[in-house]
Image (cartoon, rainbow, N blue to C red):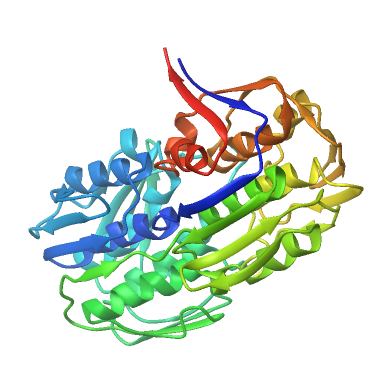
Length: 418
């Protein structure tokens, strides 16, 4: 059984390097199904989810290899098998985005219903309703969705919620649809803009990515490309929380402050100083954090993926905070683990009331998902004694070197493999 052992640490000092965004690279890998050829991705994180997506691409007939750290070569020979098997899709919800490119390239996609992190239901109905407007029909049986489209046709797609996955699936299907597709109430996340940049390099005609209205003019031909993955703003948030909890001064090398405006504003209200640095983002904290209220919202609001780190920070802040979750109904499940560490948190529905304590107490806790697991590691920096974090394989899905990077800046963190 793997465990991460953390002892109270601080202050932190030095540089941490921000890897490529998990939530972007997986979609870029899926997009390589759109056209035959050789693709090269740079700034690719060495994480489990990338390994799973690589296996999914191989199952469809592609070859995937890493010629060196941070690089990924994908060869699409054409004539792929347009199917995403259950044993791979169940491991990672992002697998559903292969549906769009497979429909565009082959007119059909057979995709198992997705799995992923355990923090409540996230139905894919929005994906299906959105691509259906492009002329797609669906059959569902035996745990699979079989999508077909003899001819994709551009359409106006109004999303009832700015879903990232639905926006991505429509974008990748629409690049080969006849005519123009307009996505209204589209997701605005930086990862959407990164995918659009990748697709435009391939020859797509996409305007407005990063805004609430995206227009896509269908094209007849796409080509393989080389691309550098955008930095992971959620990983950057992890280290912002670490310096806020443990104190000290860090430079987040490679981070994009312009992708984290609201986060920087909120941690600033808590007492963490940040500023743009030539290398990325500089952050410093030298006093106890202050309580603030916050609510998760679609980008550019406070991301739901940031929330576990912010809750960890507020659990040791001075005062009472109220945190409201507006995206996923079940995303307070990790709070019980923080309570085991002495946090004073009460949840009711989609609200949490947090009464900050001067320090937490080390205890055995368990990871339930990627970001919550990393938040427990960060929270343990402020816990007296020793914290043992079990099931760290969840963390490996989104972080290649969390323990090593924290060690390098002075945290007392080790990983034990029994």
